[in-house]
Image 1 (tube, rainbow, N blue to C red):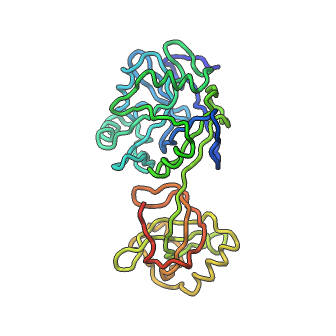
Image 2 (image 1 turned 30 degrees about the vertical axis):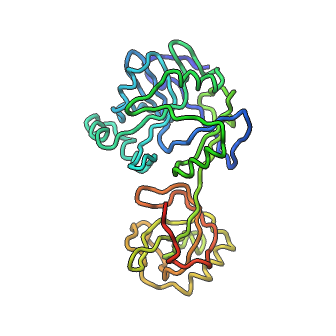
Image 3 (image 1 turned 180 degrees about the horizontal axis):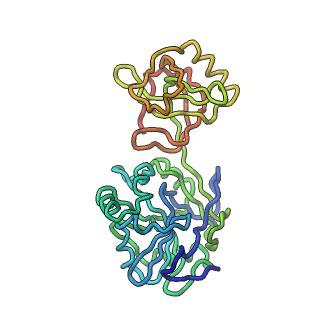
Length: 320
């Protein structure tokens, strides 16, 4: 058990962590929540003020002044949640959040809070009015959290759901990072990575056109892929290095080698991606699995799945 210490040096506790899972846990003993792509934060509220700590134990209160008013909503409480930055479509953008994460200068933090404000997604209640709730089962902590009706301009308690497959499908439809399954009877174990919480990432597949490749430890270290633009050139969508085994490499080289020594087919490509590239005529389509997209359309965590000889470049649809 941990001891609540009030506003003294150091975080009140380390957050409980989830294990990675490829399949959704199933059964009546589980509940499901969206996984928010942001920064984990413990918030301690006392004497009308709120202080925040990152997972590392570093205090991050100064970085997010728009969350200061959360301190006026409760007295003597500790919350667990995720700091996220929502884009124009209402989806979390880790790329945009990166501009906020390490700010420790008060005036700059205030300017950023006005232009690109964050939201604190609260998903657990660990301490309330002198009571340590970490030994309570999750469903009781969740009920206590929801009873507080914490809804504000920059914080919210996102819903939990009893139907895992439907929650996963909703995460995919809304292009969220995935979901977290939690045992309803699990206690909160600070600093422990436990199978009582399981995170499952949502994944997507789409087709892209190869514009070149970069050698690495193998002949094909990474594919440079894009989507057709008017005029026949490609808009860059990223570098795909995962999923290319020996057989896939042979099949790729069979198609790519005869098409090499062309000029770059990309409208624009970052210099760090173009370095050492072998360009090819943009004629080969591949299917790629990925996690999400950055605001500029680049794929996150892409993996090669297969060649698509049945598709032409003009068949590629870049709808997200």
